[in-house]
Amino acid sequence: MIAAYAALAASMVIVGGNVVLLKLLAAHLPTFPLLFMRTSFATLCLAPLVAPRLPAPRTLAILFMQAACGTLLYNGMMVAGLKLTGAVQAGLVLASLPAVIALGAALFLREHLRPLQWAAVVLAGVGIAALARGGGGFSLVGDALIFGAVCGEAGYALFARRAAGLLPVMQATFWMQACGAAMTAPLAIASFGQVHFTWLIAGLLLVNSLTSSVLAVILWYHGMRRVQAGIAGTFTALLPATATLMGVLVLAEPFTRGDAMGFAALFVSMVLILRPQRRPPWKRKASA
Image 1 (spheres, one colour):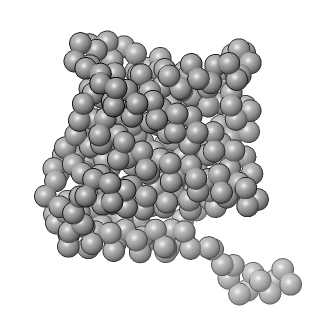
Image 2 (tube, rainbow, N blue to C red; image 1 turned 90 degrees about the vertical axis):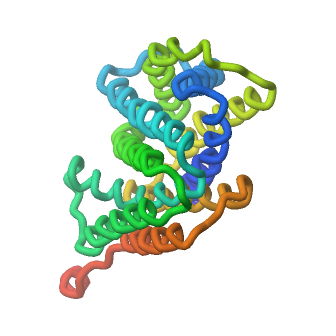
């Protein structure tokens, strides 16, 4: 079980750290060619490691929807948002992810939310509003795009609950990246003329593809096969923490008073969402 926890934690740290890489790549590459090249390279790397067998239609449909949420919504909006706002601001907005996942689970998976979890959802909204009003002078549109990425990542996590165990880890990762490449290809064609590579950009894209599109996904699937979905969701808190820390340390972005106010509300929201549920006293006595 410790290995599964370590895999989930490492996956979220990798994704959070890649926010800085995406910020650098977004400044030099159009959104859809970036996503197409990243998912295509990941697919080519994984192809020799999997059996070339098409999954069942229902399984492929789930992986396609997961790719739509993870590639088009999360990564697409993240790249577009990072062209307008900073990595620190993006990391703070990403702190709303546990609350959004919990709300999505309640709406779409019929999971019950406790009163404290509803309070966490409200606090997440307050935190996002504080960042929009007082955060580091970045674009409101950029922050809105980052929140759209949060919704995409939440959809990815919810579909991951259904996809876990349907295929071996490597096959699930391969087919999800292949779906991502297929859906971004038509959107990338129109912008390929604007792509101007340097060795540095090519290297950053290679690292981003291998870490975020391959290693992080494999680790997440590996952990999800052994850990309950509710516990796995707690590890998403590492994503915004890593993204914010890397933005400050690597890009030297400021951490303002508005950022601090928004983060305080979002931090309390995460604590409430991730707090273990305790059984009421009468239920504990009944089971004794």
